[in-house]
Image (cartoon, rainbow, N blue to C red; front, top):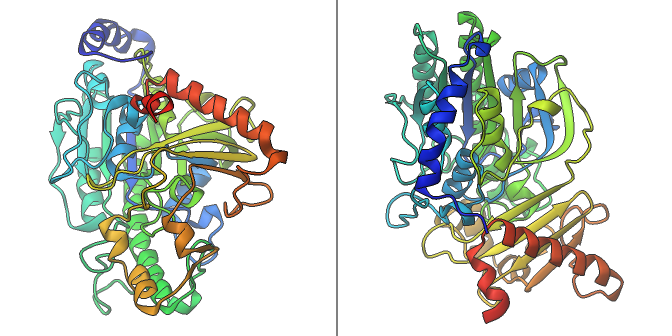
Length: 459
């Protein structure tokens, strides 16, 4: 079993610092990590024909777009903890949301990106959403004053980038778009300068996992508008890096924390919740505009940033750096990812574990007799309220009943059934595949010290 304690973390300090001050480092190797909030594959460079995302598209043209990138969990705080620690959330302890009454915390002593980089001499700064606990584990030297919306955050980030720096820097930009607001997506009212981001609900492509209703279309149009504001912020930061010359020595990453904020996506391990954008641009790439077919996980983000900074990853990180494959379209050995969900809000207990290959996905629902809980923002959405008030029985390709009630095991052939609607777990012809996937999932749980292993013997 693997468990990282504070003593192991402390023991890393000397070797981290020594590696960071090596003369071989040369020019500063800066990092800008930009995280969108609840953003799915609604991006021009990912094939959406309606959305306008020139900023993200420009980043993809300058670097590598991972066509098969997967969050390890589809919930804000747990997903960010995976990115920052290189551990799955059941390993690091950030089982659910960090804020308010939810109050989930990572285990003491878990090594994290901001602390490891600070020990190596980096100036660390954050603007915008943090959303992980405890603060000491994810400590930034500077918490920059947040601006209004994505543009405001970008303005603050650009000022930081333009500063004279005597150290390499790690800048985390935690955008709040396109997360839902108390009403809609927090978009400015029409006629206030937001027209360039507005969309006609009738032109929006409704994904197959959502019901095509007037409420859904209105919801999606607002969502697309919020993505436009997010993209504007990304473009401003890319402009700042270029104008200051920092684009020549800065690793730039854009990623989303989890899928779109609708039932059937966010808080599930179905592809709409975990198959997300990941765009990486490194100054020393030999090729630009690469579209990688590697199956990468967000557990790979921390090792990637540490590799760029030339810092040895600590024991207990399960991911691996993607830097060696940035120039490759179809690298070998990147063919499986895993998922782990336990909570979102503190009242939303629904533990699931997942293994996904290129052809198959196996989901183990560890509390399957329970109804699948819906996050408050999903439940309150005009889409879901329209389903409830209209007595709708079908929700995209699923029935409402199937959306809320899951069997213990789910097995899907993604080649034949990309919508994940035909469960093959009970079919005799799939027995060998099912048994193999079960065994591989359990082995991964053992390797990653999953507390929910107890359910194999006690339930």
